[in-house]
Image 1: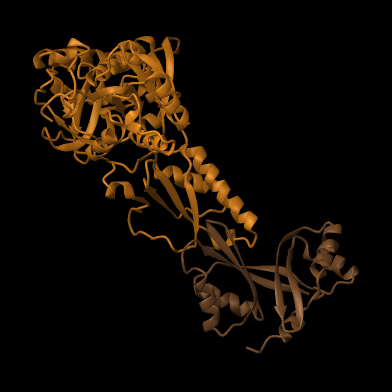
Image 2 (image 1 turned 90 degrees about the horizontal axis):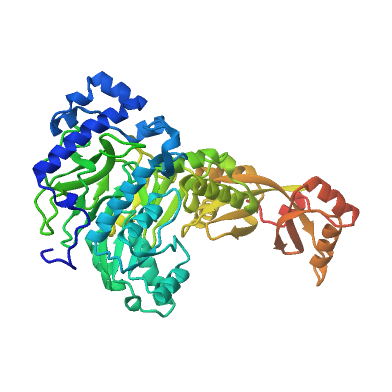
Amino acid sequence: MDTFAFENRVWDTAETLPRDQLASLQVQRLRDVVARVARVPFYHETFADAGITPDSIRTLDDLRRLPFTTKAHLRDHYPLGFLAVPREQLARFHGSSGTTGRPTFVPYTRDDLDLWADLCARFLVAGGLRPEHTVQIAFGYGLFTGGFGLHYGVERVGAAIIPAAAGNTPRQLMLMQDLGAQVLVCTPSYALNIADVARAHGIDPRTLPLEFAHFGGEPWTEDMRIELEDQLGLIAMNNYGLSEVIGPGVSGECAARCGMHIQEDHFIAECVDPETLEPVPPGEQGELVFTALTKQAMPIIRYRTRDIASLDPAPCACGRTTVRMSRVVGRTDDMLIIRGVNVFPSQVEEALLRVEGTAPHYLIEVDRPGALDELKIHVEIRPQDFSDKMSQMEMLRRRIDREIASITGIRAAVELVEPQTLERFMGKARRVIDHRREKGLI
Amino acid sequence: MKLQQLSVFLENRPGQLGVPVNALAEAGINILTMSVADTTQFGILRIVVRNWLRARAVLERAGCVVKVTEVVAVDVPDRPGGLAQVLRIIQDAGINVEYMYALRSRDRADIVFRFDDPDAAIEVLKTNGLEVVSNDDLFDSLPRE
């Protein structure tokens, strides 16, 4: 897009640093964080193996000598093996899903929380938020970083918050209308649901007081943006983050809306080939890797996000000098995002194994027939599990339901199918069919 | 005294009922009675046939999931109030019925019951003067296969 969707405002001058100044700042901070993580066992070992010391960090190229950190590493050091400060300094815990039942915990010091609020303020202001606005936050408030992250970011900007949290859509509409919310924060698919429910209640969504929305928590397409803006009569802005790095606040769109500016004074972004781990040329797609330079409780070095996107270093019309990332176009692993929640096929497998007598032959089917994602799991029953009693079959299905909800955190429709009816695979099983991709929704 | 009922799992797809039914037809097996229990997700087809061993083999060869369950066929007086009388006896004796379905042939009206404890149920029924139908009696009224 060539023109600004609204007046461009910059929250922090760090967003417009000349590139050479930004680079020296990054090198200095990289050296500092390498020193700070010395007390983290994983980094202590891997740095020693690679002969890395703070002094040996002289240019940004030295970043490439540092080891990558993966989700598996975080999992292996559950619960707090990546903590870099004494417990007494902690002010908050958040978390994100793991591939099995256990989340990855992310601790924060008071300074980390202060930084986090500021980073969120940056993208919110870049995305049109003003102190005189009223913001309705329809994200879950809990371990999930979206709710509290956006909350304190909005508060930092000075806008008023309606902490609506997630769900109860008729109530969301009531709050929005009666309190005059101009800004909506939620997942893009939930926003579509709000529009649907509004119409079902005889309200034209375009008559809602909303002017802006900041959507995150799941990938969404340009087509979705057009759809949302059309249905709700607002300007839809994108932002990106992940809890392992800090939460929301890693990057966000400006009024020019061609990519999301990464807060490079706090995060060094790399885009690598997921196979060779070599950097890809600018503009090409690869796996996003982030190094958190200034976090205290859990600084992270070269974290492989498994998100696929591209980086554009060209200067932006908005005056920000920071590199812009494209939307996330896919994953390097099999993780799904369903109604804003991370779900791994292996979680479904674990759930099925826990239910006594269910063979782990399953198929995950994801679709978005309306506004919301729907998850259907086809499970083969074994002959010995079949009962002539309907009550027992129902009980089996309910137990599977409960286990899946317990491990993944979301409800799925479970369909029992005959044995030998699901496809068998020679190599890696393709256990997921995602209709949303064919429909161009994600 | 007890009949061997076959239950077949029916997936929630169009035409699923046709699979077991056609398999039996092709094997020349006559269905004495049947019932279909269904939820929105799946169904259970219950059938009574003369030669259940053969029928089970035929169904499993056709890819069906089959379970064998003992059920009891009770002769019901073929007049208004006949069923009510049978149910009253069962209820008064505190016998638990999982499910039931009707079976009517040329000269008899029977109800097939799935009791939690079929042997105890048979005792109660006989004590109360009800006739529990044997295999032979039941299948005599069917043409030979």
